[in-house]
Length: 63
Image 1 (spheres, rainbow, N blue to C red):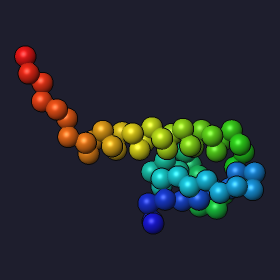
Image 2 (image 1 turned 180 degrees about the horizontal axis):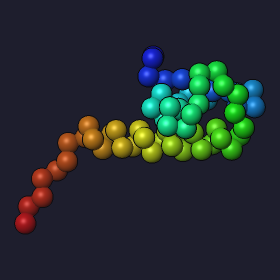
Image 3 (image 1 turned 135 degrees about the vertical axis):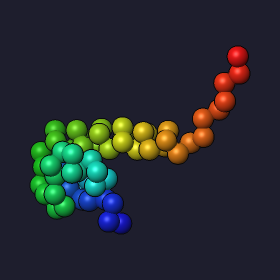
């Protein structure tokens, strides 16, 4: 699982995608504030939704 990293938020583990972590300047095992962890989780969700939309076949439109 090299494409994911773990950050520590208030004693809890948060797993996010490496691309999100790199964009936010986070490192594996880094301790972060609750606010930073929540931002990372929200960005991670947006990133995953974008990936799913790229992979999911789009229905053809008929006029």
